[in-house]
Image (cartoon, rainbow, N blue to C red; front, top):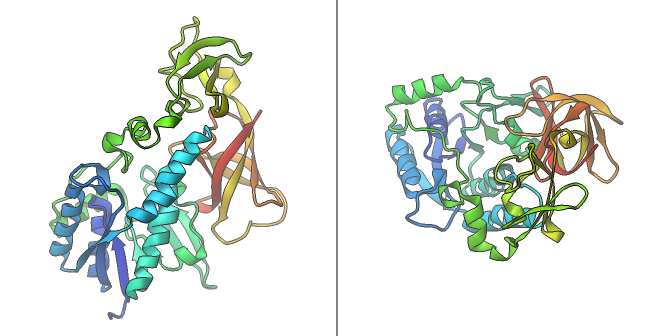
Length: 359
């Protein structure tokens, strides 16, 4: 073992994780590159999980001079991510499978893989930073490159995960990551970022649901807030709160999805002003520090969409483990099933799953 220790690096075949692995090898870590096999569709290209991605990851390991493996985590992924994706849609919520994958797979099953191999640490190419404090605690900070910051998707990480995790590119701007990839001579230096849902071919979530859970996609009614029928649809799961396009109704002025009523197969629509919500309720809550910052309600910045701005809010931990977030000003299109993450400055305090939004 090297002086720096051993590290299992999650290598998707993209530029960020490739540079992360090469940087750690250069810094003297004993690196094992590991490509996670998450989906069953062999021979089908889908983002970070297809055969070409695996080939790219292995090529980078050869160039970097460190060993490489493929970790079969398909069973864990099916249960924790795909199963949850279907269950959330069945409940009329819009799931966040990437956040679920990070918590349950990349910093759950993958950490267990490191334990099986006797490896000290894990590392990924995420754009976040881990700030190790003198008392041994670790703070989770936004990535230095605001345009690439992925802290929203890692809000569920706690002290156990952070104490064993490295984020080598979290303090870099993306342009510098690509420059380093060129300097290392990596074939992925100009590779485009993956944007699609990895387990759905071509990123087609609706098509994926039709294949694995066809009973969910039941025809139903599009109604207004008074229950008047305005049109029909082929499945509630094709919609999300705040959606305007593809509603299949024409009433003379724009209408937006206000609510998904899955038990009755109804999509409720209305004018934009009815999208405003004063706050939300969240469950599956995780505090990065292991506990709330203090007793009672506190002020923070809250983000309830991945690419949305963080906005001032009051955050109230409830006795049942859920958290109520009240916005300083009403916000539009708060979608149940998505994540809400609260910040203090650059620090991620915690986050959870939105289960309700209130006016």
